[in-house]
Image (cartoon, rainbow, N blue to C red; front, side):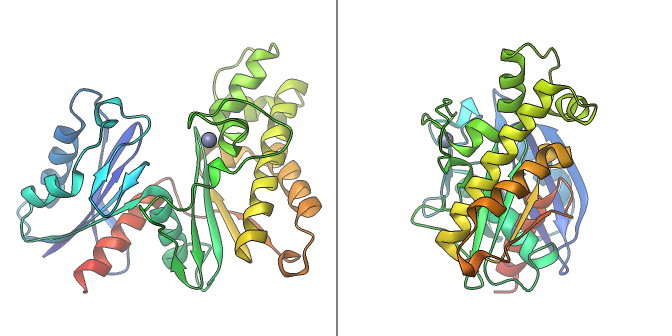
Length: 297
Ligand SMILES: [Zn+2]
């Protein structure tokens, strides 16, 4: 019997077989086709399953999701913006399997809690900072899911003093200020000529003032958002993954300074904020946790 994990990202899909220790094997990846994303998911799942009988499938999806109905409508997947019944479709494909769905941020925090930097932590946050900013929450030892499964959207906490339009339709969100994409856009609007978050980080490390300022702006917004969430939820550890989080001191210096400046209440005074040790595949691992736990009842 095989246990499968499926990660539905905004631009990439991945699937694999999960073992009881939450390691994911035989991972296959594909670009998220804009015309027929389901065909891509189906082919990945069928290829990964091979001749195995499938007992459980965990799905981690970019949000928004509606977990009670099993419908997803990821912001960056135009074909599914009207809502796609992913759980029903997967059940049609594997009628005997238990199917579980969670938003990617919840999968991320599950992965950190079982095999990453939040092991043994009952109250913590996991963030991913890449082209967007996402996250998940562990409170009192449990993943916070919320009414529709969308709890943990840490990227849409509002930071002070910035009114940049956010992909969510709002203004001044952490994601609007601190994502890799937003930071690149901000630097380009001030005359920097590079194009990616990786280039931006490299230029900041060389001391180029515009990239340095873009990183400081992003790091400060992240630190402010983290401090707000930490005070709200009484957490003691935060782990941050994602490509843009690998930007090093130009991002992390201002981030830590903002956390120190804003986390002044005694109960969050020792707040630890660290870089995730999990690879890019953390959402897939978290989807695997969902599946393994569904398979074991
Ligand atoms: Zn927003």
